[in-house]
Amino acid sequence: MKKQGYHHGNLRQALIDAALALITEKGPTGFTLSEAAKGAGVTPAAVYRHFEGREDIIAAAALQGYALFTDLLDHAYNNGQPSALAAFSATGRAYLAFARRYPGYYIAMFESGISVNRTPEIAHAAARARGVLETAASALAARIPQDKRPPARLFSAHVMALSHGVVELFARNSPGTNHPFDPEDLLESGIGIYLRGLGLIPTDC
Amino acid sequence: MKKQGYHHGNLRQALIDAALALITEKGPTGFTLSEAAKGAGVTPAAVYRHFEGREDIIAAAALQGYALFTDLLDHAYNNGQPSALAAFSATGRAYLAFARRYPGYYIAMFESGISVNRTPEIAHAAARARGVLETAASALAARIPQDKRPPARLFSAHVMALSHGVVELFARNSPGTNHPFDPEDLLESGIGIYLRGLGLIPTDC
DNA sequence: TGTACATCAGTGAACGCGCGTTCACTGATGTAC
DNA sequence: TGTACATCAGTGAACGCGCGTTCACTGATGTAC
Image (cartoon, rainbow over all chains, first blue to last red; front, side, top):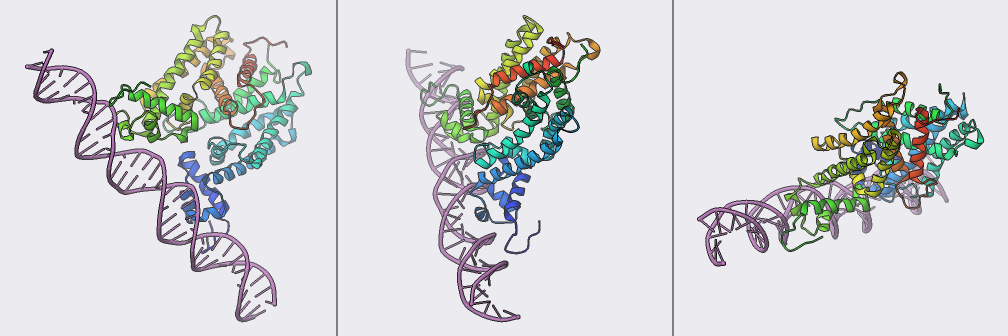
């Protein structure tokens, strides 16, 4: 937050950061253009030098979020090392870790009402993130006999749904709600059981 | 919508219905007290005869939603008949069916920002719904050898998370988004693989 | 059955507020000569 | 190095709007006698 006089320096990013802070603190509804401007130490009118309007700020935040998300997933995937299974699990954990470490981005991406199809850029960024999960799923699927192999997209969709559900239902600290399970454990055990169901983890039957 | 003159008859329910319609159409943000009043054919001020304010309407809708949700889940569970497994699967399907048939209720319950702990009534209603899923999970868990049986709450949480994730990521028709999978198939296959992982459906290993 | 009256669900005008957005402007910066 | 000027990122005042909420009110309903 280095602000020296009339010109801001990097107002665009400062506005996105302010928006993320507001979203994190008060939910997607609690974000207004005016307040984001105030957060960045600037008049509401100045916002229009960098964004088309209120929604455009959230969209920009979501776009950044998808890029970061992809990076984290990709880093967790680690080119499928040390094993397809370990890499896949790590990717699942990274999903939850992202949601917990960057709630503002997560909300902008999934809860703000911004459609992935708002701009081609966002659609592309979201597709890249999905791509990482599907790559991880493919590598893992290769270990299942071809005739009983489910489409990789199907089970990456399962893992996405499970992860998203865990985030939304169990990783949001609604005041007063005390969840009986640690979200990380919940996701880990859920994916474990699921992978056993696919025959990718040995059962003792 | 039978409105005969000065007195409305059942304004309270009419307001809830108007709120649900608005929420369904425009999302949780697109709901305003004034517009709900207009939808019910009444002055905004009249709302205060029945509700404490804007949020109170959503809370009332959510409460009704939880009651209906519980009924549907309970009906699908059907006292565990014809089998624990079939009853459990039916309950999972009912989760998704509720979200698709009553999107307004679903949004009020899960996406509106209304906390389950807002009132004891809502908390209780939500707990009842969860109770049905846990009962179904318990009956099923009884078929797993006791020493390797996971807590019923754990795997009912898994199924809730998977179901919720499927609803949020794949059952919302964001304009322009074309999902490769039918949500019902996605949930069904996901639960199937999961149950196989628990050893509740025979594998051929 | 008819009248007086209490109850209560609605009206409609008014309010203050913060919002998003616009506009003509001005101060700072960087560049050409 | 110094000056003139173009560029552009910000200001600040103003706007119209719809919001939630309040208030004194009034019309409709139901009940006591």
